Image (cartoon, rainbow, N blue to C red):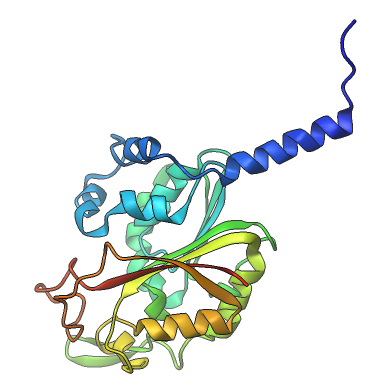
Length: 263
């Protein structure tokens, strides 16, 4: 006789197993295979040395089947890696607001042409607070080198000051939107260019940097706790006073890497 299977218990077991699988981060071997894939654009690979994606992916804990938000994703350099990491059963939300979209549109459209990364969900030219992501669904939230753009309001272009926003982004509302979309055990990774302590929001406009203390304070204020920090992108020789696009520091800025969880 065939053994009886208690269907509700079996279904619960399968559901729990699926969740457990999604929580398993990629192994070092899988990360190496992902980064060496012949499908990766050559221009992406050329930036691996300064960005160290093998360490960043391991630090993030991204795994197959996860749901990831890459906010202020730019041209999707990291979005592509997350797309390959989570696989067909996963999903990557890619968000750029109206300011970031000005600089990212061409690159992201090229990257995703012909449905090349089919598990990406686009929030193009859209404020964070307008994203439609189900509550308690995100395993990982990620932003690299763009958190400071929450406070990016004006820029010098061709010798003239160009107003990009009338005011800073409502970061409290943005972080609440993101937090609501995260699972209770979700993680939030922030990488950015460090600015001098006490430099305020002007560093975001003049240097494209941000004081790490601002990030820590705002995340704590929003209900997050810092659980881990990585130091492999730090550069004590960076004087923190130059624009990040200055040839003398480009790709070599002092960058902090934080991982937060919900409190």
